Length: 115
Image 1 (cartoon, rainbow, N blue to C red):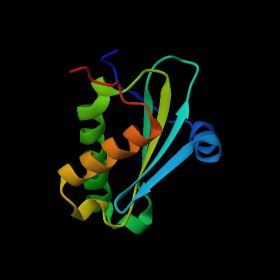
Image 2 (cartoon, helix red, strand yellow; image 1 turned 90 degrees about the vertical axis):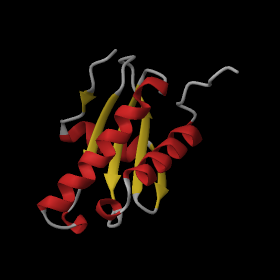
Image 3 (tube, rainbow, N blue to C red; image 1 turned 90 degrees about the horizontal axis):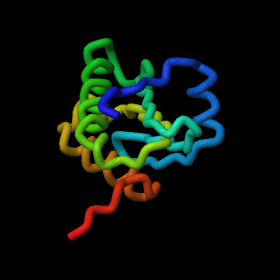
């Protein structure tokens, strides 16, 4: 399970937006939905509101890095869409990491650590 699977199809994005559960914070919106594939898939959306190409790319990079850090703690069988917000390119990566972890914890998809 070391391969990161991305969501590319528009119909997958639409389905998760409609049926998924959403969690909102100042610099990140997370949509989470159970899938039947028993693996983890993710997609990142950065709209034109975020800014120019440099800012959108930075937003995607920071979100991706946070997801990769948390990947081993997430239960299998879920789809995630992370939506960048206006603040995203300007905040430190630790902020995105903390917000993502909070969203995943609220959704109950993090593996509980013993001890």
